[in-house]
Amino acid sequence: MDKTICVGDTTLLEGVAGAGPSTWVPAVNISDPGIADPLVWPSVTTEYIIRTETAFGCPGVDTVQVIVNPLPPVSAGVDTAVCLGDTLLLDGSGAFTYFWNPVNFLDDATLANPTSIPDTSITYILTGTDGNGCVNFDTVNIVVNPLPDVDAGPDVLIDLVKDEVALLNGLSTTAVSWLWTPPTGLTYPLIPNPTGQPEETTTYILSVTDLNGCVNTDTMVLEVKNEYTIIIPDGFTPNGDGLNDVFHVVIIGLIEVQDISIYNRWGELVFQTSERNGGWDGTYRGIPQEIATYVVVVRILDPKGTPVKATGTTTIIR
Image 1 (cartoon, rainbow, N blue to C red):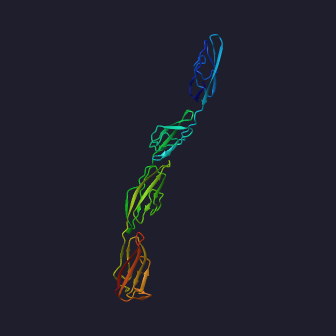
Image 2: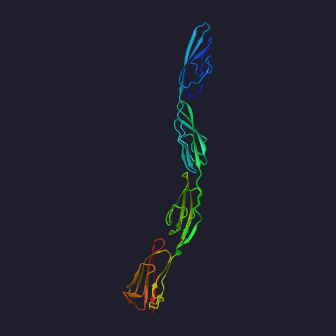
Image 3: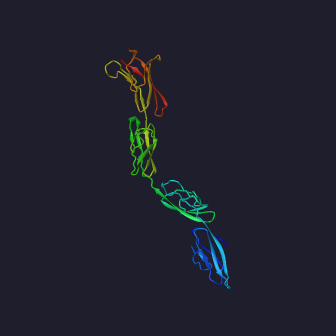
């Protein structure tokens, strides 16, 4: 009966011994060509012939073919480096069924392309079997690089009314690039220590990348205090003595002034400016205005961009 094996396997030839000596040819890859049942391990399909002799001296000849199937071209993929925490898809191929060993970090060790999330470097051995039952092996090395160290620094409080800014203090001993997000309110987001003055409390994320392309992040909160104040003086004395001659609205805080308007008792607009430090000297069209009480309207955008109107009165005193 013919035999079927895989490359590298051994099989037993089962010849029947005669009264005289038995001889197998070819005498290649065979344990003993002079016995009826030797072991053989051919590397290619081979026909073996046994010659025997009966008790009456008559020759006997028989043949058996040993069919040698090639091993499957099993591949476990190329060696790979990943960063700690990365998900890796292994790349097995060349077989009908698969098994990865060890099974550590794998979602299914019987898939050709299982998912691995290794937390340490590891070598996987892939065993692949083809439709003939032939088995082959391959290995793949996975190097797990650590993440870069990163510290975004402590949380900071700034007061925009005092025009304060914060110096962010990012730290890393292994980073080669830096990125602060969002970039809003920062002088330059690609350095470890930008200054920041956002209009509202902001959580900044510092992402650093090392030479291996691994990324790590940390966060800090830049808390913003932005209380504004509008003070409308209740009077001024435009008499040319250099003391309190000009009316000014006092505005404290980083807010946008849309306009400051002053109206007389008849509702006539006698002064208007969009400058937060703009002042009224008590004249209208070059004519000094009478001693009276005037209505002051201040329109601003608050720190969130919402329109706000403040009103008050001021009196000319001479």
